[in-house]
Length: 153
Image (cartoon, rainbow, N blue to C red; front, side):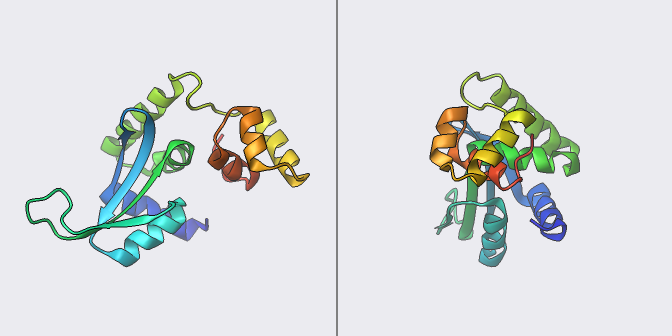
């Protein structure tokens, strides 16, 4: 992601983003707005798998909204990247989510630089992301980020 796009996303998430847990099982980055074009651009940058639409989000006559979400390792990676640029309130929330995910053994595993380099090399040599995820005990989405050199380690 280019710096210009990254900092655009940082500003958008500072103003409109939500950092949370999804059902107390997975970190979540959530963006909900009435501007479809903005949400679609953010979803692309965040690597969200889909953008959804709700006629009346939250009920009570709210305006229709577009929603993009990312979960798990992808959300953790983005949280780590945007953390230094967030205001105090969101930074504290992100720190608590990252601490929570670190405290859950076997759920979210951070790779050290040596393992990340091994993943990159094995991927370059033709290993499948699925196989690398199983071998290193991480999600396939994290392997994808590491293989592209985008994971925050």
